[in-house]
Length: 260
Image (tube, rainbow, N blue to C red; front, side, top):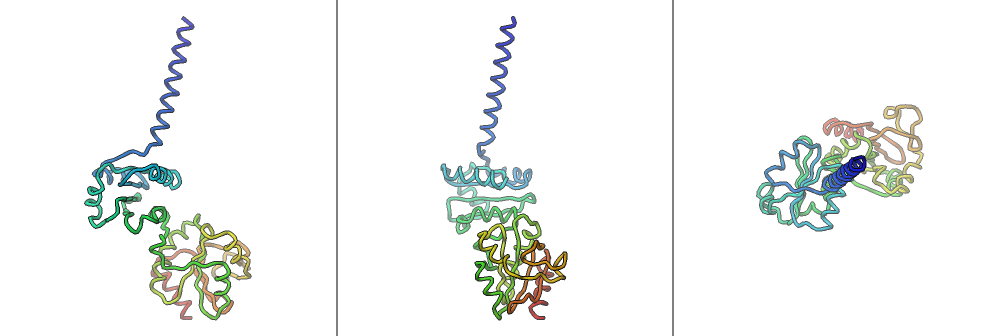
């Protein structure tokens, strides 16, 4: 009798382990959904990515990367590519379409010329990241910034990092403002630049103006608040904007510095 109970216990244990393993394997699969269920599914998640098009090992690997790295829900669309085009944009020419939804059901349709920058457009929805094709602000090396800082021309530089929520909010603002003013705006993100290039800039003896510093004698060589907009000319800081502001306020502050 004892032997029979032991065998039953072993069988139950094996079934539980098998069930857990099956669940883990199944949960890792990317499921398929019909196009008419997309909005319903997206409304129940914070960020959701849907893919329509040819499936391959490379596509599967990429989708799993987006799912695991960006923490988004990912689904295949089971309908034909034409059904998806009819729903989102009949003028799409590519046979691959990504549709990204946020928690408010705002969407980004990624196709045609955007396909090369899928990851950037996903980050646009999640982090307010500005994708390369939409970028109006400028980037530069550390040496170029030093040269511009010391030149007789006005240089506008914004310093930020990815872990700063206000930096993420400000990025599309400065991108829009960059379209409207004559001066170039340069963007230096600590987490996106080559470490040596960023260190080159931070090694400069640049003092943050007191009105933008939380404590006296703040400089590049100390920890300073981000996002920080510094306007320089002739090797001197002539103005600054600390933190995030919406488009109109930021533009007004920047104009007052440039015109002052």
